[in-house]
Length: 404
Image 1: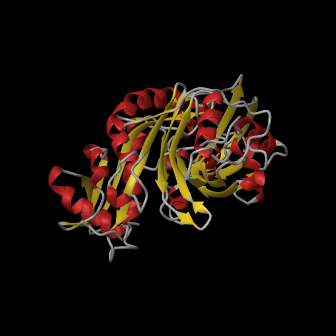
Image 2: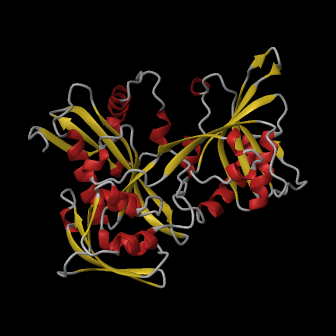
Image 3: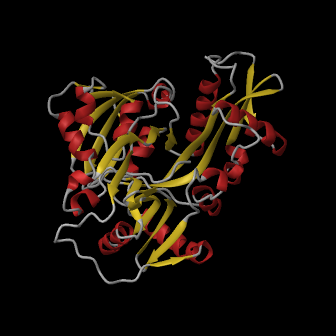
């Protein structure tokens, strides 16, 4: 429960310097060097500060976004960002007040999904966010690694161009591709400046971004120089690889792996990136899986019908949600031909779970059956967890390629 001395409101222009300082201090950054790029995308009417008297001690914002959900559909989502509590003011309910204000606002505005990246893994489940809604795969491999013989590489020329030449092509390509990839978000104009900000202070010894275009895709990467007695050992650090065809995907990966003077390629990519199955020796690909998007169902009856499902099912789901009490209770979840209908019911529950578990499975990347084994889901009617697992599972692993 929040301290009764605290108040909350949306920000004004005069709040920006202190908003920035509190954000920097909370993330152990230097306020003089804090990256102001986020201010380009912050929506003032959706950003909040918590005050103790006149002192700003907490910050949070919501970005208006669309997320691609199973079935290739676009769903409105509130992208939660810059949630901070000023040092010295923890455990006063600041985060709870920010979360409650945001979720109630999303409920009132009819946005049924909230998403965020968690700075700490122990915070957001208590606010109903489900972990591992998408995963991120940090992948490294040696360059020059061979593809297996069945992978075709075309002779299409890939051009390295300036940022100015690349941007119009990349904007159009990204907008087409993101509509087909579960977990991808739309980008407003300022988002491009945030995602591909290229300040020298952020490069950590790497070059500026390089932009390479294929007629059906593009790749953005940096280079980190290195040498050894055996010769050049440069590293390629891929920021973004976007393709609308499988051929472009193979061509661009081959281009990266064959780049002269390089020894290693690294990329934060999807958990099911097919490169593992394209190379002749998959043991040369090192993988490290971490959580990415956390997802919160704001309104059960609005959110679940937004996506398509893999099989028919008719189950009563009992949801526990103390933070958004309008979700609590039993819901009949019926899927026919991939489309869901969700209605209130007094019928006995077939399955019980909390809001966080429902958020984890929504995009199809986490199996409900696994959450049952983890004691996060209770099955009252035998067989219903398996039926719901098959309904929710997707044909691809969800993936969000950008932090916000």
